[in-house]
Amino acid sequence: MATLLKLEDVHKTYPLDGGNVPAINGISLTINTGEFVAVIGPSGSGKSTAMNLIGCLDTATKGCIFLEKQNIQQLPESELAHIRGRKIGFVFQTFNLIPTLDALENVALPMLFQKVPKKKRKQKARQLLEQVGLGNRLHHLPNQLSGGQRQRVAIARALANDPEIILADEPTGNLDTKTGEGIMKLLQDLNKQGKTIIVVTHNPALTKMADKIITLKDGKVVSG
Image 1 (cartoon, rainbow, N blue to C red):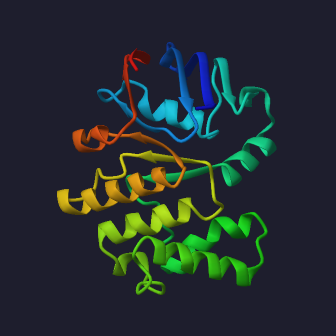
Image 2: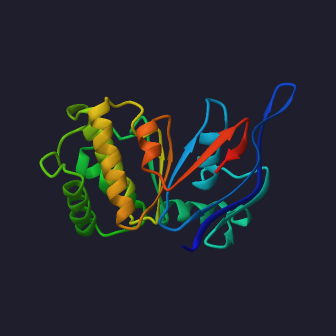
Image 3: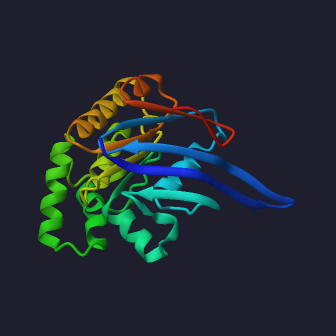
């Protein structure tokens, strides 16, 4: 497998009254193309901070983060925004759907920012919603959908620009066991289709699906 992501001695500190607080404290790790990776660890271990750095939502205080051999720490915000839009799809525990847009419009939105023509946006959004089993919910607003259905819309939205990487932060955290199992199966299917999946989770069943488990504690990798 080719190396897709590589972190070398990455640190992230946040300024607070009285000094700096380290959230990430010298992380080094490698993720290969097509892997299903679970990131685990107690609250405050740096999991979400690591995901934000990998996802180009934040920049490290120190260290290098290579995406396909390019050090993204050296890129301007405009280039990071392009990477976020084209190469990375995000799935959040709280879904983060826009409440005034229906399922089709929520999924089409990332393509609007990439200047995809309207007809193609609607066609692609419809195909993605059908792929996640929501072909009969295209025009439902988020508050008309169950938690599992909203998470499926969020996953379809993450796939809108055909990213190489899906970053999922506690994707089953707000779901009941049966619904969560459906979301895990969907992520597993996407991985089989060639997507690199990186999941922050406390769900033991989700970690069992992973090719690699990375354990963080106190902002450091303790295994994986």
